[in-house]
Every structure is written in C-alpha cells, then in structure tokens.
Image (cartoon, rainbow, N blue to C red; front, side, top):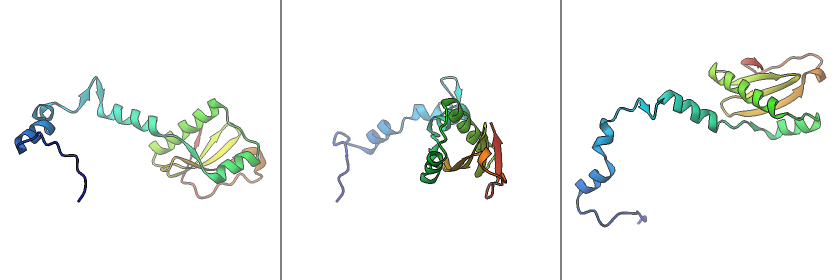
Length: 133
C-alpha cells in the first residue's frame, strides 16, 4: 500500500472540491496575467531554460583547436540557435565570426566546433539550415 498524504480534516468530497477546485479561478480569463500574454510568458520561459550544452566531442574539438569563446560570442551563438529553432531547423550550422558550430537545435547541444580558417573545403554536411550571427 502506498503512502498517500491524505488530509484527515476533510469530512466530505465537497470540502475537498472546495479546497482544490476553486470555482472563482475557473471564471477568470487566462489570456492576460499581470499584463503579460501567454505567448510572452511562454517565450520568456523558453529563453530562460534554454541553456546551450556542448557535447563531449565538441568540448574536445574546442580544446584541441585552442578555441575559446568570449561572452559576447557565446551570447551570439545562443542567439543563432534560437533563430534556428524559430525557423524549425533541427541540425544547424551557426557561424560566429571565424568559428563554425554544428548544433542539434532540439537538444540545444553543440555537436562540433571548428575555426573556419582550418577547413580547406568549408563543406558542412548533415545540416538542414545555417545561421550567421
């Protein structure tokens, strides 16, 4: 038998419903809470939770190639990923200055990174879009 936290002070289902199902809240319009629309709140939550990750492979490539990102470049990379996401791109090439990043957009993960000057052919495969920031 599972341990449920049941309040022994309730003597009827009406008390439970009155406590947990607030009829006044149901009649309140949901479109605008504290001056913000649902869309604004949703976008804000997406932006605040979208932390860009680097795969083990990408981290190794950055180390091997002595690539360090400035804070400004990191912000531009995140901005590029957000733009790619807005366009429905799943695997994106994001160019920041002379740096190239392949990003799995749904997972918010940088898959690999390189300096454009070290690639002779500048060919990028397995992408469905590119963002230059």
